[in-house]
Structures are given as structure tokens and as C-alpha cells.
Length: 406
Image (tube, rainbow, N blue to C red):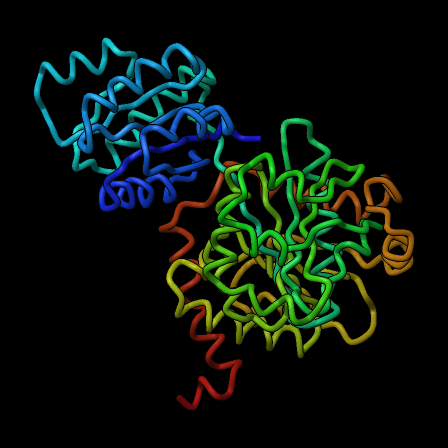
């Protein structure tokens, strides 16, 4: 798990409390465990959630708030207390610091000021680490059509990432109607994505992890709903909240998208740091890749996240050459996964991931290479990528008749 700072907030003023909540929820390296509107209830909240940091707004009643800070500095010494106020009175600041507050912040706050303060608290809690706290890498796995191996890629990629003891990895099955990630892992989950969405307001990090199913590989699974009618409660906003909570809990999040490219899928891709687009070297798949890339081009920052993966490379019948595919797409292929139908059928039927079923197979090594490449901190400069991709737009439009006419 990344070094996420868990925070509990108290502020009787609805306006300033909502503003602070909005700022905290928007930060990847913190998680808002609880917010409270009454000073007298706050000690119970701290006792129940045991946060790393407590944010106490003073302005509703400075005397009560300072008394609260003094009490908590004794009863909950593990919780670093931050005071916030519109006042710049030196006497008030001195009283607050003497009561036990680690920091005093003046409202209105900028996100940079709050982030800098929380970074200092995080360093005190977890120690300074090179490059700061580790952000969660969110990898959305999409397909050019059904049956190209999206789920097998997502599941086995997640298992390979989870094999590294420095990683904590979760897999979310967003194929809400027909997802089968649980089949690949031979799991019978107690809870599904629908349960998490319906209870998102009451979940904290610990409860969320207990809601996920942990596979023997170390991978945590959040499967699709059991009943079709349960999918109705899942929308773009709820998925963003679930992803936000998972990002605060894991170093890697792998999302297996559906083939419908619904608003739920789009929301997940917008939250992702990388999008893996799985295709095969046949005409229908490549036409779909062109169509999808044209659509992604119209969405802010989506196209730049996409990496094209060719699955079942080396399949003899009906395949277009790799050289021709690159010319058609106007961009490089990020990775190749070899055709090994027999092994993949065994993996699926046995419900055992590749790293356990066939650790020495070529397809397994290719998934390892893909994981290492995705997990690399080295990315091509934006300027170079932009120059390389400009010619592609024209080729896509030529390849897609409707766009060429337009």
C-alpha cells in the first residue's frame, strides 16, 4: 500500500467544511476517513477511525476547538492535529500550538498550501522517501472487440504485478453484465462492485479491503454484480468514487473494461494513468482500433494514455502483417503477446493464473515484460510523442470511410 495519509475532519460550519472536504477528496495521497460537524462527537470519530491526521476548524467556537485539540493531543497522540481558521491573531495561533496542534493554517486555503502541509505530516509519519509518496498506477484494459483476450490480459497482468512484494494490487471487473474475472481466478466472492457502490459513503480503507476477495497470488478482486438489476446503481460518478478509494488503498489498480465503452468505462479511462488497448492483427480489430482512437482524440488527454497491445501474435490464419498494422495505425505497437491457445484454455478452465499454471511459458514471460514496461517510470517526452502521432490522425481518417467523407 502506498503511504496514504488518512484524515478526519471536524468543522461545524457547513460551507467551510464542504470546501475542505472538496480539497481533501481531490488529493491522491490522502484519504478522508471521516468528517464531523460537532466538536463533542469528534473524539469518538478519532477513536473509531484512528486517523493519521486530524483537521480541526476553529472558527465556529475557538475556545471549544482549542480545548478539543488539547484533549486529543493527550488521548490520541498518534494523530497529528492541524488547526484551520480565518483568524491571523497571534494570540490565537500561540494558544492553538501550545494546545498541541502541529500546524496552523489560515483560511481560505490554496490546494498547494494544504498539500505542502500534508506532505510535511506524511514525512513525519512515514519518513521521507525518494520522490515522495508513491502514487497509485491505474491501468485500464480495453478491447478492440469481444474475444481478443482483454480479461485474460487484465487478470494475468494483475497477478504478475501482485507477485512483487512491494506492490499491492486490485482488479476491478467493469464488464457489468458478462464479466468473468472471478472465473479466471476460481473465486466465489462475498461482495461485488454493486455492494461497494451502494455503501461507498460508509466505507473506509480497512472495510474496503475486507470487501474484496484476495487471491492466493496476492491480487485483490472486486467482481461485477451478480444480478443484472444491480448494475443500475453503478454510474460514472460512483465509479470515480470507488476508484478514488482504491487508489488510496493500493499501489496498482487494474480495471477490466467492458466492450460497450459506456459512460462507466469512459469514467474509468479518464481516471486511469495508462490505457491498454488489446487487439488482434485482423481487419475488424484494426478498424475498431482506428475508430476508437479517433474517438479518444476528441476526449481530453485520453489518446495520450493509450498503449496498443497485440494479442495472439503469430497466429497463422487471417492475420495482417505487423508492418502493415503499424502503417495503418500510424503508431508503434507497445507489446506483443504470443499465440498460445492451449495454455490459455487450461488457465481459464482451471481458474489458475499463468504465473502459477505455466510460469515458464512464452506467454507468461510476455505478460511479465508488459508489466515491467507499464510499471517503468520512464516515459517518452510529450513533444516527441505529439510529433510522432500527428501523421496518424490523417491515416486513421483515410482508413475510416465515414471520417474521410466528413
